[in-house]
Length: 257
Image (tube, rainbow, N blue to C red; front, side, top):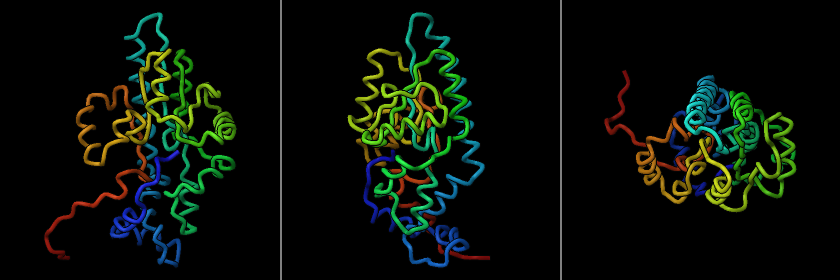
């Protein structure tokens, strides 16, 4: 599930200032008074661009190479495990976000998410199943650590099983309740954690969730040697802490030629 709601007023005010947001939806909707249309450019990139699909496949290809290396280095007698987020890492929920935006509803309130968990039909992120099947074939324990709602556990399990993902069970799918850091700690009690996958930095370490955006940038620099090694990050242009950040603009006067 997405991260907790943040200041949507500030977020929308910042996004409405983007010159590309309104034209992106002009052909689709005659009513431009809807503030949620500011999400359109990022959401269209996330759902429709071939570049995001390529990045997703690239991320899982890299994950496989790194997993091979890490398993070779472990040797015998070790219980390896990987932890992966679900939403926008393994499964694509953009259809819900697009529906909400079309209805001028702010999907970052997450008040339509529970029904989506129960009734929605997310698709797989390109490359996800092939990678997870490979991990399963290599004897790696797969844990799905997600902030989807615990009350919808049966529905989430059914969704993942319908997508034919490996090792789906009440024990391996760890949903919202304790912070993700605590759920990760529960995994390492009995396993050697060799890789984590996610679309948000708090999928990798609790310190990211506690930091402001500038602090997150500092932490990325501090942990630079882990990205592309045992931390594999996937693109998500639809939502995130960055959404309310101010943009840096060239200060020169606008001139056209």
